[in-house]
Length: 338
Ligand code: TYM
Image 1 (spheres, rainbow, N blue to C red):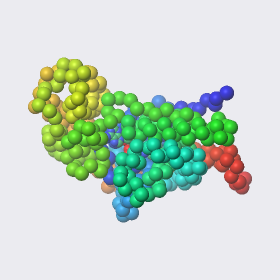
Image 2: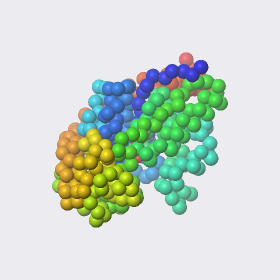
Image 3: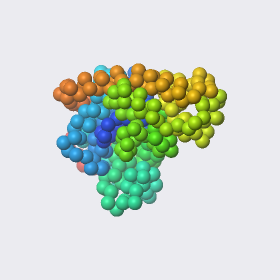
């Protein structure tokens, strides 16, 4: 018989560089949408960030900035647990156990490691390679059943399911749930504004490639105005956007920002040229993003308050994690005092 797990959401964002429109639409906005529907736990995964070099003098502030993004977007620390990973040592402890469950062959298939380590994989940190096992620990430490993420994290959530299944099988238990990735809505893969074949990321070469959650109104408008497009007007149907990656991306962004669908956006703007669509998109983005950017700046002016929220959230997270880690130790046969 399989155990029934209480529906519970877990997700996280790395504090490495600023938050982008990709993080907002692909993750944070959707985190807010799930709040109140079931138990929600949202983490700033600082231990993941250090798998690549982070300047110690900047990491704490980058951690606060992700927390400020969560709060400014509408996550409420009274409803959701908001915390940073390194304050809950059980993540690292379960991560080690999963390092011993996951197989090297599984890790070798992870496309993100290949992309990030590139041709210099020999010089990548061992942590970057083992990263997906720590991510599985983040999720399974809370027996989370639902994980809202962007498309790029799908493979890691699938690996989490494999780790849970192997653990349950090896130890003949039904202890960890088979977590579902939740990848829905029009903006699960927001693309680079200068090259529609590349994902929008924190670390792209030019700042014009991305919208940052902290960009002011003028800069947001300028970036959309300069976004790469093709000479054609918007088509009559969504099929007409096939092979038009940049155009499709802007339509998807518009749909997500307006809580609509790409079909509805195309219906409204069929035949419109960029001279009409781009300013409409820029206005919409400014209307939605600029107040959040202002709120983030206001929150960042009081770091002690953010630290207090994260410390309080960490305490709640530790309370949920402790019994699950203790049972895991018992299942594995690790001796602990009682
Ligand atoms: P990270 O920090 O790279 O990204 C955080 C979230 O933002 C989404 N995202 C995007 N979505 C759409 N379009 C984009 N261009 C875009 N860029 C980023 C990501 O898919 C992600 O949902 N390994 C994770 C962090 C993590 C995690 C976890 C997530 C650690 N433990 C447990 C869920 C559950 C990462 O590096 O995300």
